[in-house]
Image (tube, rainbow, N blue to C red; front, side, top):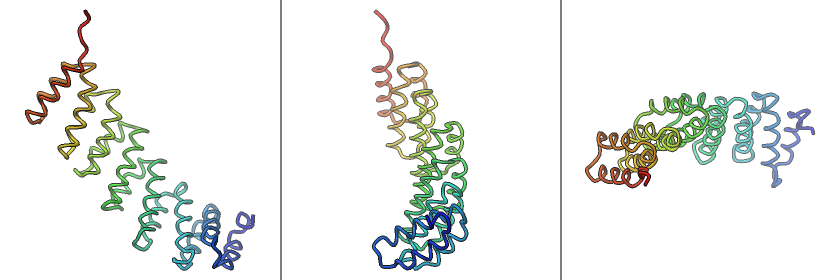
Length: 232
């Protein structure tokens, strides 16, 4: 109750509990409440603590609490943490929650602020959530991504979402995947569905696609097997 009415006083009380096995949890609880009322004060207190003695718990609680209120602020705070597992975990937590809440606003920020494996993870989270919320807008964003394994995975998610409504669209997206194995696999998935509804169009697409002879023969065989059979 003290934390709700006077988080500063609660923070002072918690500091007297150092050494208790629950200290980290209490610190995080105070910051979570404080951040909703006065974010700058909560962050200042969290950052004033010894990072290895409650400070990491406090900053993590601030980041988690603020992500639903101010995701850019949370990500910026996470990026300023010392390199290591806690920093990576904090960044990924923000990305996970922000991508679910508003992938459109998260997209440009992750592209400018993140690199390496964290960027790959973020692209995946944004793509998956955005495709569910607005497939057309997500596809426009995915189209701007540079070739990379992360883009290939995002396109694969888009192919999965597009197949039920438009196997033709799914097939065209699949052709843009950079990795040969993944590209062929996703093209096959689209052809499998397309052959059931419009085998002639599917065959024409396969004939004009950039494929090896073996890949083309395999897809044409799929079309033949999956195409609707004439009624007796």
